[in-house]
Length: 575
Image 1 (cartoon, rainbow, N blue to C red):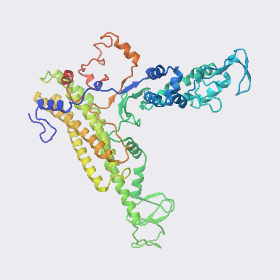
Image 2 (cartoon, rainbow, N blue to C red):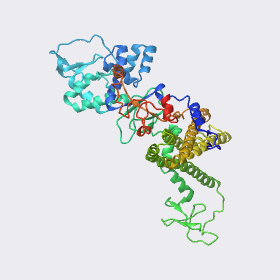
Image 3 (cartoon, rainbow, N blue to C red):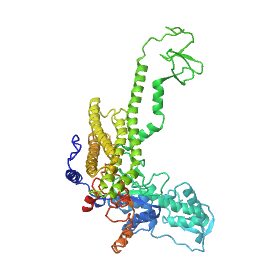
């Protein structure tokens, strides 16, 4: 059975296509077998995630919880960095830099005795005075007012002692106790700030930027330069918190967003097609053949040079005006504006076309479900139809990569970012290399889209088998081309730059990693002690069973393990 011999990525039989898949994807294992680095932290699990890090510091240094929190907030909740400072610099340096002062022996005073507060200079009974860990003692009213001011100013995570030049951080239990007596709402605000500091001050944890906000945070373990998917379904770049945009770097994507949303290219159009009135400076578009133009303000000017003139003119001249001299600077500026505009339109039109195609192809999901359902009812010789949904997922991911490759090319081969990094000859060679790969990917993506839109549920058995081979082959081809494009970008293009500020999230054949729910170490230890069958119900299609559901589950994998979507279900189950 022949299939697509003109394409070097195609295989000529069903068995060869499966062999090709196994060979090409041999290095792709389920993500759970390597590292599932992204975790979803919900509102309910945020406190547990924070306490897990607090517990590690408390156990190592034998500290109270608020002391451990002070150290962690100072080190932006980086436990490994905190331990490294402890080993290299010692405990005294660690504590002093974080504002943690532990005085062992405080002077005692009788609760019934009268003492003078150095802030308000009032005599106050001893039981109405509070001493901090640093040894400074003031009346409760002064402490409470100080705490309220700090909380309202957004400084509640590191409230320092009131004493002059004292950098000690106040005990959060004392803050909470004194503030709650008079302003309970402010005490709740203080607690919320402390809990949310685990996200706000932690470079490895970020809020999901979905709109409306789902309330989840995402924690990554290893590299913050990655793309993740929240449990709400929103996919975003962890580094810049915008939508997933690789192979664009974060800086490129920020510039592209601005370019697409502001009126920079409208200004370019105005520069190309209009000229400013010399009196009111508003843009004027020429709508006739005469070079004497009159603005709405009444001012006449010469279209050729832009200078103000009188209104009288003949076919050959304008009264009181002559502009036969060539002005090279203005001509160069006009040509440059035209060239920049046409270049932007080239890349933007292709970017927009693939974005629009992706939105249209997203509607294929329901159609694919119906086609698979019809094929299952027909009792064909071919029983497994996961190749259809696997091909659809591959189409979605490769279309996204292809669309964002155009903004990347716009900046990579333009003069805005890398003018001094490459010579004109080197830029041309690299552009040709990249565009060759881009065109190959584009051609195979369009073929895959075409085959998936075929009404194969109405075809005969042998025709369905042919479609299956084509879809599997194209899925492999598209995945391979995506890998090659990323390798070209990382090694040959961005890797050769002197300034390594443009980095991209790595390509994943399995798609953007879906973050799994955070489970604390204590919860995990409790689950290990449970009976093997206590964690799931065999009738639940979103359970932790490794068997892939036949219909709905083929689109939405609710497990934390992401499987290689190139492989049919029976191949995956054998693994």
